[in-house]
Length: 107
Length: 116
Image (tube, rainbow over all chains, first blue to last red; front, side, top):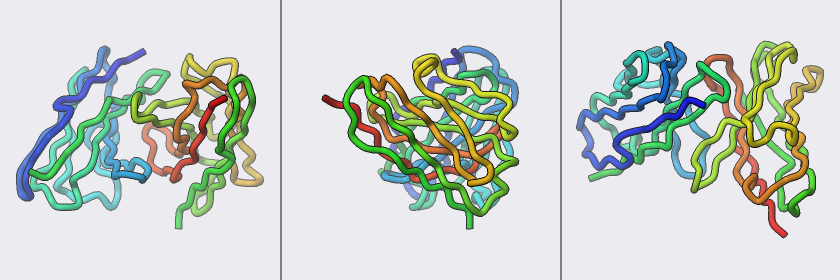
């Protein structure tokens, strides 16, 4: 199975900050990589797919990049509604796997 | 309005069975690959299974192979997960989700608790 690790696990930041979350895969995953945002008690919400394609309706302050085994989600200017948990996922090889999550908290 | 609504969760004893359903509306169900994903506080998100849009292929995570079966009824726009021989470690919130190379549509989830 492809293992995903995320860093940092916890991130404390302020409104307006630029933040980056990194996901590393144990094997190359091509471009089949996605990022999700989850708020307490809610289902995950797709933000980015295909490594860098912004899902319809997602604000442009979110962006994705990367290749091979290292991928990054960047939020250019944090807004109050962005404080949540973020997960990466590889959809290259079954079983599809998720990262353990990054909890983004208000400083 | 897109809606995915899971049902069928509950409390069940180890070794017993449960069938989850996911009723889908607002999308062309028959064109979507459909997935089940589960989540626990300890293990986070775990992808469980997928069924191809035409039903021709199914894939599972190893921990449920031989015990869980994913299926779909396109006439009812409904996805199913038959869960047999349930174990304590199957306790989780189960989400259905739709998409091919990403999971773009999610339900709100249904809680499954396996406990004696």
